[in-house]
Length: 255
Image (cartoon, rainbow, N blue to C red):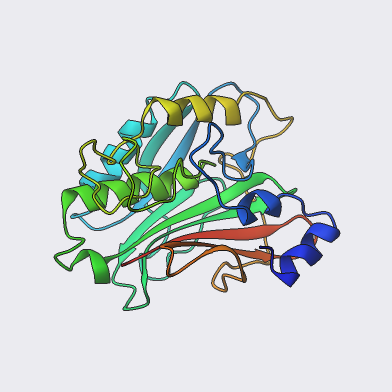
């Protein structure tokens, strides 16, 4: 159900929130609200700033390699552009951060800054070592799942399924309580790559990849809950300025 504030934003024309505010199901389309990086070429390279610890480096590298198998997208890891704890976004790219962010309930976060209702201008992935240093989450399978999924949100993919208790789909875009399966939910599957081809099947007249942008929205305030719940294991929050600009935050909660 839409919150009052989301209805107000929709009424003034920010229709891009609709995709974030409706929970996705295990259906063919798992685009995240149609959000995508604007670009003028059929394929593009997206930089990912490495602000993660040495423990996380292999998982970030693995996620970048996995998603770079796409025909439309390559991820290139570069030196980080922020300190891990504040984890500030950089225009035109993704920043990936790891730190102990505290006993606040969240396991991982993906944030995207939107302009024009649909175009991503910068993005963050954050993983919370407060929980990943605990035995229940300190496993290769959990680290792979969360890193793979949060990075993918940053270029416009949503979940194939949001039920933690049913059978695995063999995709890191499928929520699960047993990421190593079988089948394993630690990597993308063919359907994820098909969806990326659909999301990026059109060209734009300008590019937000590698570019600079200004936004009065910091993302430190997540804004209003648009969908999901902590009890359900995931939430989507929206902070918008009413002029087509927003920060959308996807949260996976620790159980």
